[in-house]
Image 1 (cartoon, rainbow, N blue to C red):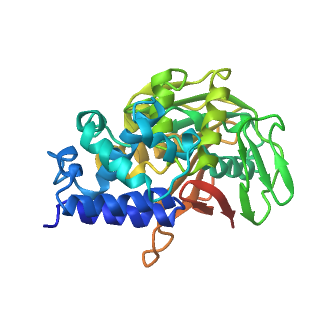
Image 2: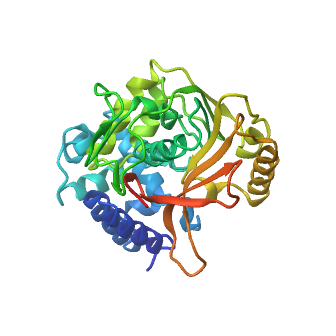
Length: 348
């Protein structure tokens, strides 16, 4: 019998394979087969049979298991997880399945929380945008972010970015984004001075806590070690760089946004807009337009974002990087295109 979730799980398997995770692609195909066969995964997902596809149930389950591995609560399964030094192969599936059978309640602990990542690679899109905008507004930057998660992308000036022309940013940074950019060269090789950085999230994660670091690490796919290395480097930078992430909706946060003379105010977000209810989206847009009418060359405003979107109605969704400036030409313009996890950003 076909389980109500198995088709969603198979779709997620294809998505993981497409984004470079052979481990999760393999695991999810086998998980879907186990659901249809009435295996132990059925009991784990009881009560979630009709969760909608966009809720990411498969990733929630995988994140919960990864958390058990990171906490050394998954026994022999750790030998197959590259995130803790193991190697994934097909022998890992029976061990994974046995964990579902032996510890269903432990796996279920995280099924009610959304997968939450703080993808550091997406900082490449933000930084390229800041380098582009700096030629128009050569001012210090106030950086505000909605959907911040743990706020790690507020640390963009602390990362090093590598492209065909060399690198930008601190040479000693523990976060290296390589390759950061392709396409036309970025217009400047000097990062702006960020004088203020703050963000908001409905469920902010405190990355300076063990619990917060565990949550963000668990939702990174275990065989994508480069992403894990970037995340751990960003954790180290967060320990010594002050910033604030408020527990606040996007609309409430932007309602409080103001302009300041002598600095460029930048509102940034990435891969979160589709989760903002339409009435809140309208409030954010209206507030930005209100602020934009008050903006000047001395108090400029930029809305910079990388979201799955279309440039024209007939196009497929891609992760376009957009910027709208006040004062400026009016409508948002496309600056480039980002890979789903950030790298590389193709600058146009």
